[in-house]
Image (cartoon, rainbow, N blue to C red; front, side, top):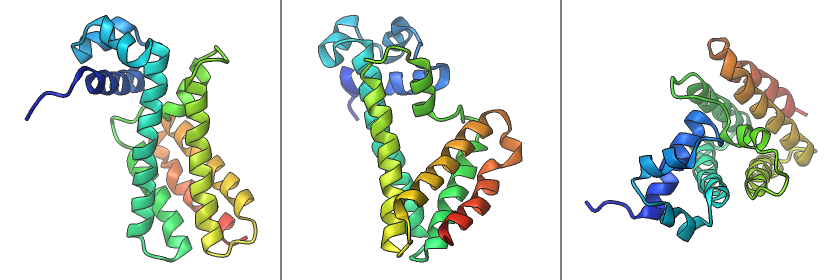
Length: 184
């Protein structure tokens, strides 16, 4: 098996380190973990800002696919599909490796309003909203956009609350609230 190229190694290192330590992790730490020269960072991403934005963009697809898969595995009943998302969130948020939502953390940490990562955070949140709205619409929910807003608030709340109190299993508490949204 061949070693991934510098671009892939930079993305992997940035993904790991920014999740573990936050988006303000030093460039030198990313370069060291990726085992690449500084020149590669600038060639592939134009700098750290571009690398952070691309890392968030690439992680988005994996997160969305994970939630879609757990819903699909739960069958076709809306209640079971949405419950499956919160069951998956419980697994995620109680794992030792959980450090919160990388998107919310990046949004809060990056104070420069022109940082390209803000657009990626927005795209992720919009994508999650759309996934829930489509799901609710497909099952005849009377207010799919509003319901998607409510579900996303619950997801965001779970991810924030679980940082400090994972033993409280906030995803399971939110799952009960999600059922109220579904029954609207």
